[in-house]
Image (cartoon, rainbow, N blue to C red):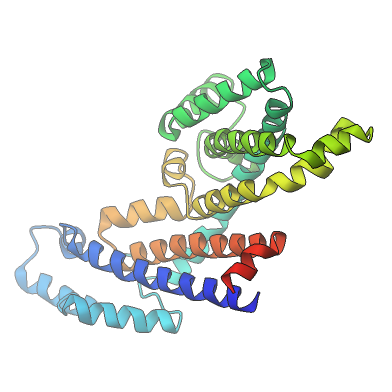
Length: 308
């Protein structure tokens, strides 16, 4: 298990380093100059050059990258080109909103997907199965940038039940969580159904039923315990995406999270903030997936033994 854990941590470190370097290079190659955004195109050349020198943008990309990596090593992500605030402070102010939305969406998805997937598997070919799969197809097909405004139109403008946007009150969380969680619930319900169907055909399930055990006990205590592995994999991948900041949902609902901060920073060509946002997103993905691998190894020791 020790070798398995070390290999996963080393691979996670390589992925993070590669992502940081790649994003740094791509951001600096994108057309647009932060100096033009800050001073305007009518600024004098001398002022533009002075600002460029003060921001360190006159140096080569290789030197800027080396300085950035040295800063990351001491947890210094730089300073915003526009607000002059440390990037760590900006991220710290936005991370709670993203984490809150991510776990609310995850709770919403799990509350819908697990019962729906189980009912679909137990009643294969029946009305529950058709209804669950129809919901899955609908949830996967409807994009967040359409579902979000439709929910706002219905529940905020017509019914007046929830705020239109922002994060001032707890009810502001409902529509973004439903928007973000619905597509995840659709994918997860299909995974729960297919995984459970495979397990229900196994000999140990037939044996449990032959012993006269209650059907709910057979499903929850025998079948589902062996159907969790692919579901946990999907949970890890999707939770990483949710923690990374659901950019479209945050923009639609004006949710003050990492996703909306990254869009604002891209528009302003605020390189340090964009890099900080991407670093947080990549860290979230890698951390969650590494934890998923570790949980996998604990659930099924054959995985960790094979890696070792």
